[in-house]
Length: 489
Image (cartoon, rainbow, N blue to C red):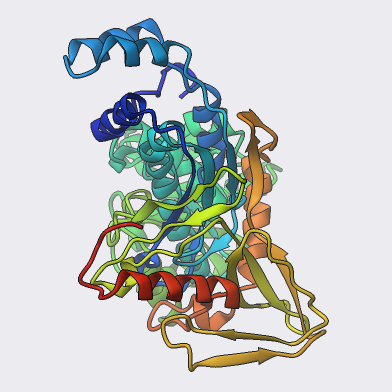
């Protein structure tokens, strides 16, 4: 992203709509919301990631002679529109949920307030970045939850769908909780820990396994994790590893970060045997690391079986989110600014209730329980609404409004989740480092109920609408008539 001009990282119809607005003289300032409709992997929550790259994209947004020449070659854009693009720049406002935040369906993660041509152009790139990194950060959070405090390393670069997916997927995985990545370029770009051991080819390139282990230990005594399953894990690999650890100890070499890694076999059975062998040999603090097509479900199962693994290397299933490879974020028009500065709400209808949008210029608050610090609900409201947490608050499910909960005044507190990122086209937000974002995410995950973190039938944290927003939505629905219509008003 630091070398490419990504202005044309967009769908063609964004450009043709831009020209349409230009030709018809439409200069309305509008509100667009980026949100998603369901949690990945059937989970109870997601993790927001990618904002720093969206900011980078927005800062570099411009049409150079090269981009304009290409658009001209398509034969569908007029010279007056191409002349306009020469001086194009983003002049609007953007509000966003900070990276590392826990998020839920239907709430606005990014809100764009800008002239319609500008807001339309950036739709595709925002969704591309937000969808990918939020997906991988969510998957990483699930994997790390299954590991129950054990270290998790991301090492899926060779199976990622291209270099960008590998690089930014590694970034997102760190945000979600991974302790490091095997991706050296990601380490350089984002200043995150890089980790790794060696391959089976290292063992096979030496006359015997012991020699390979000893040479590796001599080179990297403070990061000596030996791969023990090249030939026979229990009969050859572990005994040779123990022999090397014993000789290191006798030579006065500190055993500070050492152990073994297994990449095949019955990991539950083998890890128990390996743990006993290491303990009996006097190495109770040796790490037992495992890889081999792991994901959160297999890690949870291995934990249940009493596996003695203390470090997990997760590749393909993490970097691709193999069981749920798309996040599903969307970008919808929700309001048009009137001449007096107020906002005319807009709504999209659908036969699918989940696809009916929330209208108006909105923000949302997170409601926390004062006793537990856990999330009670998220509360979408109009941007100018305020609340007194010393007063009782009744919240309700907007799809089943008879389901209500009363929060007693003084028993809860609220935090507005959308922060200003761009104001009048200028960036007003400083992105934290990736490791700082990971720390934010760790704290955020502590606010989620354990029942919501479980993988099967997780408890739902509700995303409710304020009374004013709900009334506005109902009024628009009644005006639109039946759900057979799908037009926008």
